[in-house]
Length: 273
Image (cartoon, rainbow, N blue to C red; front, side, top):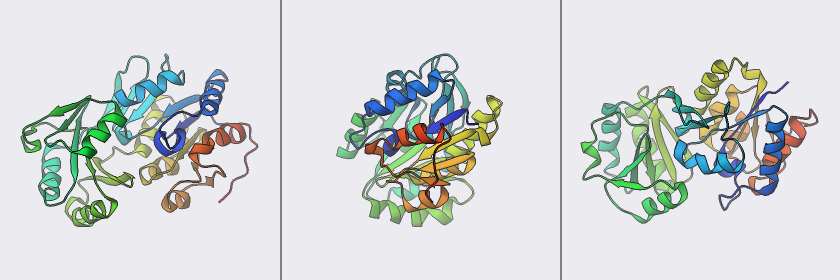
């Protein structure tokens, strides 16, 4: 019997306009009323997730969220962090030194602060979507603490070049993954959605087999593999679909999450692999 539904946000729970489909909201509220825990697991900041959790009725005692791709696990009502992993400063500096040669917009999260040293159209667009104010620094190189997450934003082709360049340099030092076609992210080793799921399962004394995880992007793969049942939405990348146990018929904008709630949690879902 499944007791917890863990879902990605962008491209999974939200539609293509980054809105919560009303049917998703209704069925999530029904599921929580039946005693199913619903947890949003996102690459976003815990501050950015708050408005969605509130709209879905998830900001309550006994509620949990996962932010920064598993680096932070927190209580939704108090916002208290029960897990907070940070990328070591020297690893961040190693990455930063390499990416300066590429045409990317660079953003650094340190807990609730989003830091940039160059204002670009992509940085402003990210601020608008995330709802997190930008903090200006003279140089990112001057940051002298460990960080929550490092983000590169730019064309997919340019980010792929960065990925190829950095892969041998940072192997075994940190995580590197695409969370969207225009977002390449870096977190501390162990800070993945899959590790966040395992941590929360142990914290709540649940077996991973009692958890369903739903996602669409490559940063969701570890979460889908760690869950008892990993579901890819129809708009997921091929890599995610290949890693999942099942694939929904619907895409995110067609309320794919409703398909999971209605069929999986009622033991009527037939896996489509």
